[in-house]
Length: 319
Length: 319
View (cartoon, each protein chain N blue to C red):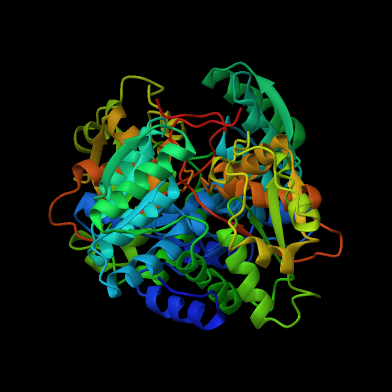
């Protein structure tokens, strides 16, 4: 679809999607500030349409697909990406197919169905997901929308940055976000890196990862993570590898700003946000806050944490 | 302390407490509007200091106690009232004692301790709570602050009404709230009834109760509920009787607007708010929404639901 990742395309995507997307609020908590010893701002993407930031890139992708006369859109997903794409397709009026691994939670599948998506089940392996999806995409003449490694997704996600700069641009000194496949991280890092010339100084983007991911090794030494899927409660970032489009961007802007956290730290961060802020975020959103809570560099005084999503089953408990 | 429930006292309480209290946001959800078939506004008192509206009345009570040279404040509580009073006392600089039944959840006791309250345990019966509290109040020369049947609490809670009228006064046609001991309900009903002359027409206050409570029988026929404690998941409104100060107010303004809901309806309402709005409210807050979701009179088009609190343990699940 769109051919390049650029500030102009990001601006255009923001304009294109803004009428349908929430400018999500920013929350704060005195109690959390006390615990962290800094003024923490939370960008509430769990209050975004479909319950995650994914709606931003997905909507941009679907609008562009329609402009290019696609018959539909398709993706494989067990979670937020599928719901975001289904919602976007429903809004814009394009058929949507999601290839879902058989072991996906029923609640997520129900979410996709509620937005009118056609569901095709496949085996719970990446190779089955990809091959079923590729076959169907050809058969249905549908645009394939990759959750991470996709120019229109990356350009679309950047609307969160325009919002944040408008809301609290002069109040923050850093942005902390959870990193998985790298699409969202690349989007934020690229835009901040290009429109805030002080990025190397004040405005740093911190990538918070489950410790098994070892993203620093990739960015500093070119060494890939040796597993395909991480063993973490942060189910939105279990994919270990970052996309090939994302890697050079993250290398350029975030080589020294990877923060690794332990599972126990994610749980404690999640508990604090549930009990203090009463926000029912998902564990993957707590990951970013765990980076601030346990590993914030001492010179950072006003971090913004992006709470990426809130899609968690009603019977989920923190053990 | 304050001698009467009045609009002037409510205005004074609002002015007195506003510097310390959140003007809590109002949230909406397209998905919930679709389900209800009306535009529902939610006043987020779970985002209030201490996680419930109780902070409003408690703070007013503590400020007045201090003005009257009390040596401290005291109450019995197993939950939100104790936390609200402890927080208020800490803010204003008065010692606070809470008499807590032995079976109270540890998390709630911890909350009170965190705000610096002295905790005295008692047997889990109302008579033990009351007698231990009365003895201590005399010994410590402390003001006793009843959670429901207390003029300064009732006057203090009314600040929520001034906020709501300022935020969405012209957008709503009714207010739905959860009713337990009746202090909050009486506060809202009294103030709306006195400053909105259209109260009998457009602006109605609906009292939502667990069905076992049978508040209509009391208001219409003078028949008290035949149990002391209700068997409901809405733990904040388990007290069956309404306070003697509250009863005549509720009789005057709400005799025809009691809404009874079933336990299953509370659970479904709670699930919707957790999953759609991502707000981790407590079951008692969902009670008010259950009234709208299942029993809204058809002429009501723009109800405001007061979400009373969000203090729920991290391991709580909806069964």
